[in-house]
Image 1 (cartoon, rainbow, N blue to C red):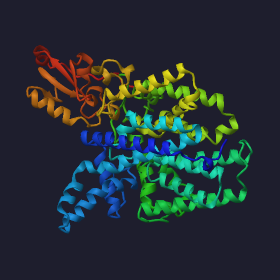
Image 2: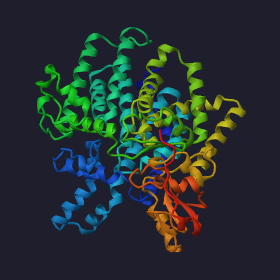
Image 3: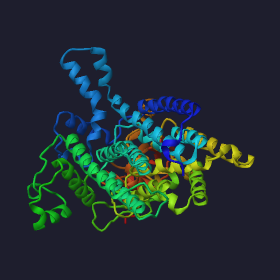
Image 4: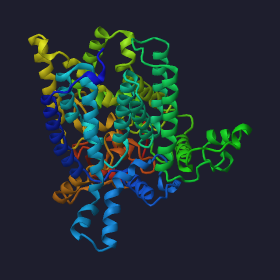
Length: 544
């Protein structure tokens, strides 16, 4: 296997990369402008503003349990606009920066950064043509577009994992001090993008162990180099977390924390731990505790919904749907990409030895597998495919293997690959620019997509412009009535499915079929007068 540093990226490849980045920037910017503010964005931006004010402490009533310092990037335009207005400077610039959708711009740049790192990964693993093809797949990916154009942290999570593993692999092949420092910093920076990025350290430890035990073809590491890298990783983690959280109450003893979850309270009660000084800032551990309590109680999200089944997250006996992300993947990833992913796995099985796999796709697949398995079997917060966005980015890297040695392939293979790319493009175009509710051709009639998935897979508050336009032309339509009413009523998917347990309308979905769909997440029903007069009792969909 060639060392990453020996691979020279051609001028043609760079030209193609920058061309795709430009196209992606235009497409993503239009999507960012088009979608209305989603349910979670304000929480992320508000916490980002707290970070910029050096106030990282969390408050349960503000739903800031899972927010992280990276959101300061999204909040920066608003902070700059406020500062300019306060000093009466650059009025037009302040006005432009103050527009709420500008907060999405940093995430769009992160999406472009992810494309670059996917390109670099694929170039190292499969060569020039496959790297160019990966740019096309990134540009057209509905999931990457949907969550790479919002002021949330899912795209930062994907970028952090893919970039950190790329730099770590470079260090494995060339364990210089410079590469060690870059890898250690990238691993630490990933931690301020999403709490689950801690899994990177597990993958890294396993990879180092495999190399040290001579399970791979690499003979680059020594005990000294591993010790130096470990020290750099620890120092980088402490430095990044403390800087990001403003050194808020670092070294506070465990018994001084106010925990909410049962798990953290039990840990706090252990005598050997209670007096230990925590080298991390208070909001870091506080956030993990609040996320655990939120997941246990379901206080910050609604019911879980899958294929007509409703899971009551306020019921401790409900432990989530084990097939949730498999089903979400089946319906929300383009079929063409699913085929290319399988093709890529076959290529890897035929062309990689176990020893080479560990330091190549194995790093990526291990991270993706841990993420998907954990979210499927150990998490109750199953509210959207966005939570496994890093795995979807890794899917593109593996799928690009199908384009390896493209020019040497037979004409039938080339034709199939071109047709799959075309199918991919057409499938995405069917929904563009509404990417959040995208579902592939397996979903069938779009009027019934709410029977498959809901929450941020379909209804995240993103389609208000379409709803407003429809209501302007149809003023007699009633939106989300509190009870059954005669005439034409428009009901959002999260009420129909019971995801909104506080305001459920499952009785409508159980008795009637929609006649139309508005903005993908709202469904139009025609209720006969006699049914409304009887005021039929509400009854819920099947619950777990």
